[in-house]
Image (cartoon, rainbow, N blue to C red):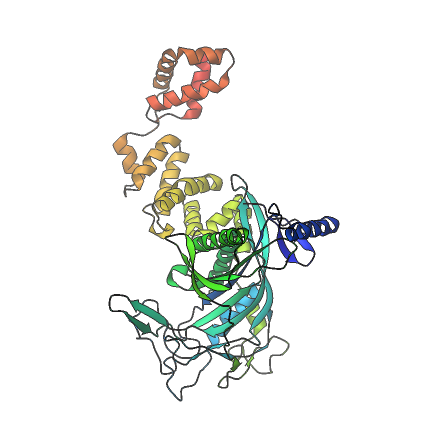
Length: 537
């Protein structure tokens, strides 16, 4: 990860690894950067500022203000109530489940939950918004002033963990719009209102990040939190988590630059690429004497670049007004809960707090403590959908050390799946089959090199025991045969034998490899080493 300066608050600098600079150094750095920037010094590094607005679809059977069902890929316009279609005289009815999901999300992100929040109308005209306005929470949202901690692997081998924190400005409830379907062949745009009115949580993050890698890590952590809470499935491929990134660059010590907004990014990988491209584009534009426009852009993943959509120089007037058909949303806690009122009658913040599940940070700590694995490996287990369950299923079915099991899973199973673009749930090798192979390895029925050969065949759907029998891969148990093979290898490699006798012990590994090759992986390297050392002496 590149090293850069990023401006957090007035007079507060830190390095990319999060370590604060001493006040005197920070002041000197501000002055030096400001003076150099004022003189147009190209040697002064650029600082990037990234903020995110994330829309998460709430996991609920019905929409935010109507009883219409929520279902992905349903036939067009098959899940539309009179209210969703904005027929005159229809009124909104707030979905309790959506409120509880937003409160739990706010609690998990260390937010202050507003016991009184308000709904507003945000007016704009577009074909997929039949009412001409969106019901949202502009003035007083349901949660404010939180933070999200996320970690990243850095270093040459990605073996060092660093933790960052991004501030959460607010979380607000709002309804989704419909979907426009463009038919280029007929030059038509069709409208599907199935999505209109679906409950969303908008999570607004402060501009505390400085590159695409940080933004992607923050979104991935939020995604895991939402899934752990059950407040959103957060499947980006299905549009259940959509990210808008606000990006600007400036010289350290100067005011923030003009920002651009990259809209509707639907994967963490594309988010990182879009932000890093936009940072490079803005820097190149400024260094070539150009200016940055306040505009909305889209990311073209095929070209790997952002494309201008519309400018935002003229600020759009959304004509916010209080929603007249919805009263203030009142929440309670243990102190303010009215007498003789159950938690099923109102939304009780403390009752929801007690029911928060283990969040990803807690799960990782438990994995490290229980299995003795590295912290960075606990991130991989949680970040890859279904991998932790796969790992624990193998652990339950084998006696092998958890660290060794994890090594096989990360290096061979996950490596193969990523190479073939497969999800863990689609793996041709299930946990029980892998456990069977590892048990054969642990009981010294086969060698590690033979186990790798077996694993290659297992991707074709065969059981390990059958493969071992067909290919005759069991370890050689006859001591005399072992000694004969080792002796033959030594006789064929007199140069290496001479070097070993002169004291170059590293060459012994080459002889061990030759024995492995002669036995087609049917020899135990530890036993081979023991026999060779005996014969050499």
